[in-house]
Image 1 (spheres, helix red, strand yellow):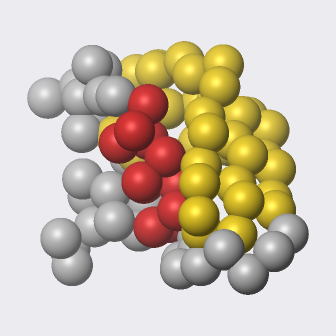
Image 2: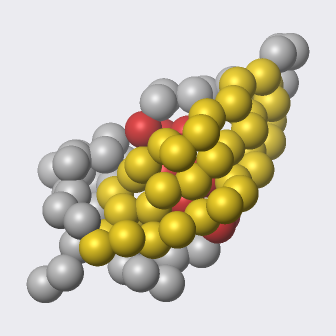
Length: 79
């Protein structure tokens, strides 16, 4: 079975103020047709960003690459 990862830029705003930006971040995804909303959720989960108010992902590319164990991703044993 082919494994996939998403490569993307992200911008997070926090409910208690402030924000975070990421460029060319990678997360494991369950399939090549993953949605931007799912990628955003995986991004927040992978970093344990609990106070996130919004996350916007841009410049998404899904690539064939072995999973690296993204927290909350398809290879996470806690799922």
